[in-house]
Length: 94
Image (cartoon, rainbow, N blue to C red; front, side, top):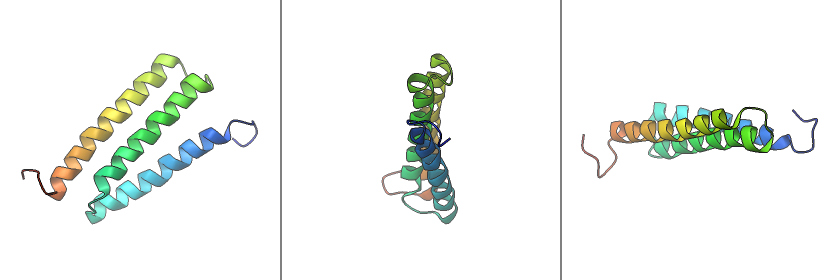
């Protein structure tokens, strides 16, 4: 992945996915208050990487990249809301 001049952008995207995925897993496991935010950041990094793959580099089809980005954001928001409710954050009903 380090061959082309603009491919490090993909490397950064996948590294962010890995870091946010590990942090989200640890945060949910330990019940950290920041866990929902990290889950949303994971979804955003997945969406951004998919859009870069589709629209910038043309590695995948446009519609597939767009579908993947929308699904990543939607699922991240749903999971973050679930995690937030399970952690019993202030202002949410149990």
